[in-house]
Amino acid sequence: MIQNDSVLDDLKNDWKGIDKLLSIVKGTSYVLPSGDIFQENEKWQSYNIPFLLSYVVLDNVLSAFHGQGNFTCKEKRTLNNLMEASRPHIPWRNFDTINKGRLARNELAHEAVLLSKEECIRFIEAIRLELVGWSIL
Image 1 (cartoon, one colour):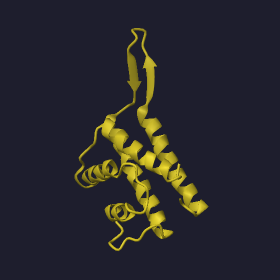
Image 2 (cartoon, rainbow, N blue to C red):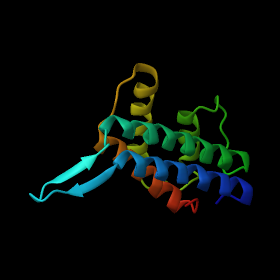
Image 3 (cartoon, helix red, strand yellow):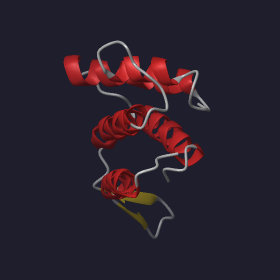
């Protein structure tokens, strides 16, 4: 759906950065002789960084759609306004989940309210599915 190949490449590269961060925060797993799994370097709080960045990518994607005329946004171009303006024009798979994540992102960014690892992954994967559906990834 993104018509400009250069913009599309930039968006894909931005998402590759999120994938790389996720692989870093996951750390390395070892199976101990007892059969237990030891996870090295995984800090659940670290998942909040790629979570935040996934919403930056979403904002950039919606801004690109807006810029090429897929929809208009009469309000100030915040992520919320872009999401709402795009809703009737772009096929969203799970708008409500992503919008809940946007609210959680605001709490993290403005009030330092951390999300759990599971919440971060759920919202990141919801955005990933949208990007796949929109032929970004």
